[in-house]
Image (cartoon, rainbow, N blue to C red; front, side):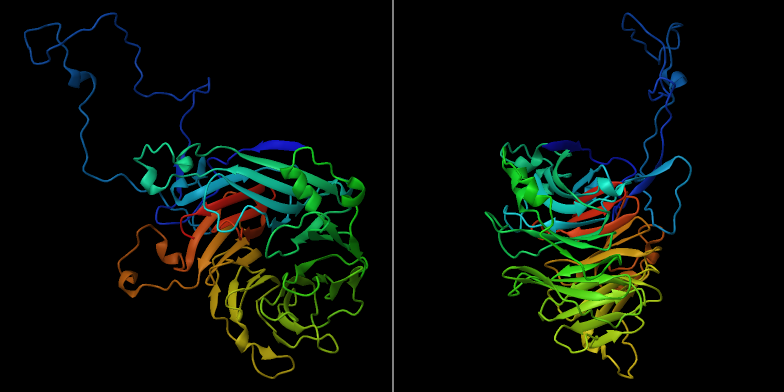
Amino acid sequence: MSKRSATDTQDGQPFQKMAAGGSKRDMPAVDEMGEFEDAWEDDIESDEEVVVDGNDENDEDGMDVDEVLPAIEESDEAPQAPQVFIPGTHVLGKDEILEADDSVYIMRHSMNVNWPCLSFDVLRDNLGNERQRFPATAYIVSGTQADDASKNEVLVYKMSSLHRTQKDSNDSDSDNEDDDDAEDLDEDAILEYRSIPHVGGVNRIRAQPLSSAVPSGSQPYHVATWADTGKVHIWDVRPLVESLDSPGYVIDKSRTNTPIFTIPSHGRAEGFAMDWASSGASSLRLLTGDIHSKIYLTTSTPSGFNALSQPFLSHTSSVEDIQWSPSEPTVFASCSADQSIQIWDVRTRGRKSVAGIVTAHESDVNVISWNRLTTYLLVSGGDEGAIKTWDLRNVKKSGSAACDPAPVASFNWHKAPITSIEWHPTEDSIFAASGADNQVTMWDLAVEQDDDEAGMGETFPGEAQVPPQLLFVHQGQKDIKEVHWHSQIPGTVISTALDGFNIFKTISV
């Protein structure tokens, strides 16, 4: 069993924007021995206590303390608030680093991995829904981008000992011995994993959505990988999950190390777009899109999987992302480097889109997410850094002369391509996004500008540049690629980047 401690990130790692935002600070002076210098240190030593009356002018041996150390004057001024760092506006100076304000995190952990995992998905577990207690445990599946194709793997990670970063406010002055959450704050998380070999790097990985318990016995838990070799593989990761929870469990590598099915439809064309239909369908359905603008559907049968040979064709460039409709089992959406978002129905003859937004973004549309609660809302992220929310009731039918609809909301906070975007699983106005500018952002469309506060001035410099809908900014990772909510641990977000995983929960969501 492979097991290692995942150290929590300290200064210079995750950063947030809240009322009490992060701060910049200068590094303290350090002497040659690695110890901090004390500006008030003196070398005067005495073997006995000397009592001096500073008011006795006739005592030649008397010493006026004020002559040695001037009196400290008390100030009525409040301490200076931390300086809020606004990405894209402020620049760190020499010897300055970002310092996370843990007072706005309920939980925050950082975990390093052997090889970058540029895509992952959250695995459902049997530990219950709506979990609030700490320490928490989470399971994810990911794929590597190793320096050699033969070293790549599909990995199932178990993140455990996810301790609370901050006590609840009502714990601050309490000595309640029964409060488990008040103990072992900021402990190191534990990262365990099981792996299977994978030919080629993993461009994207998606787990079969489950609405109830994790499969057991002989029932498989399917995971699909888009390989940079142009192949899409389907795996059964249930034995890997079970081995992490059952000491002595022996994995049958002759079965787990071989894909259940490999989709040959794309030939040698590489791809990134992939999505499973919800578990409510009568059979498993997987959509995959490649860089040659083709989308293929693979379905399950009693005897296995069947890859349909006829592609869906309406895009004119690389298909970047795909999402099944949460309410209509035959409908899906896709986005492309041709700047468009297309809506499809698998029952349509000719395999053409039925509606779409021809110019959704100024450049490539990298990612989309379909709101599972308010099912006419879809959010997209572009290569230019813009985030847009669309009302699909206004989208024109294919071939129509009508103009593209205007987005219901548009944000230009990110200064680099949007790499991932996802609606909150239980709050229909909240979504999270990640960008190549090393930010994970959380947004709430239900927040509006308060007219009474609009003219009251700024609580910190640059506040006027921050959209009121922006709830939180998390920083500290390099080249963030993907972000997902954990549906069973409310408000918990997991992100992956070149330097590993972050898992955190904030007080703002």
